[in-house]
Image 1: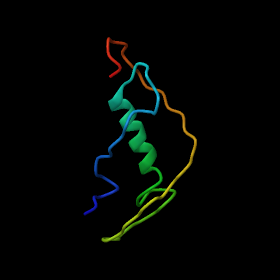
Image 2: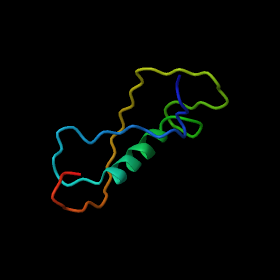
Image 3: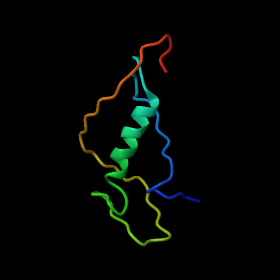
Image 4: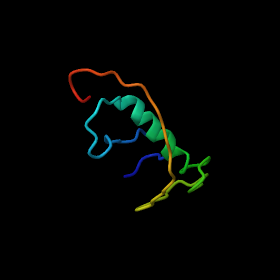
Amino acid sequence: MGSCFESSPLEVSSPANYRGAFNYQAFRSIVEQYYRSFVGAGGSGIRISGGSNIRMRNNTFIQPATAEFEVQVTGGPW
């Protein structure tokens, strides 16, 4: 069974091959904002409103984005 793509938490992994200081919560928040800008009632990629049984698979959006967030340098990578 699926979940609500507009409000359900997203599972976000760290950037591939990145080994530096990292702030997972800040990164996850930025990724979530990016995703939700494409999908949902207010999205620019797939705008769905009023549907109750919608299945989406293998959708790909490519839109360059740049974001900055604070990291705290500690002993571990996370």
